[in-house]
Image (cartoon, rainbow, N blue to C red; front, side):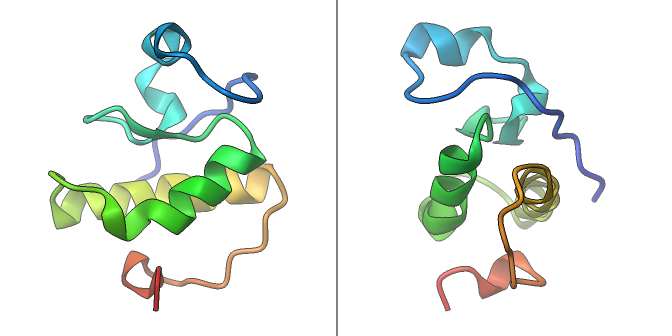
Length: 89
C-alpha cells in the first residue's frame, strides 16, 4: 500500500485540539487518525507502540508502516525493520 504521510510542522506534545486540527496525512493510520507523525519523538513513539495499536486491519498496518518509513526518513531516524511484522521482535 502506498504512503499517504506528508510532513506537518508540529513539535512537542499535542493537545486534543492540536490533534483534531492535523490533516489525516499527518497520521501513521490516516483512516483511524492514530499515531501522529509530527516530529521525531512521535515517529519513535509510533514505532515503539505499533504492535499495541488496536482496531486496525493488516492492510492499514501495511499503510501505516509505509507512512512511518517516510516520516522516519524525513526526520533522519534509522529504521532497520523491513516489515511492520518486525516491530517489537
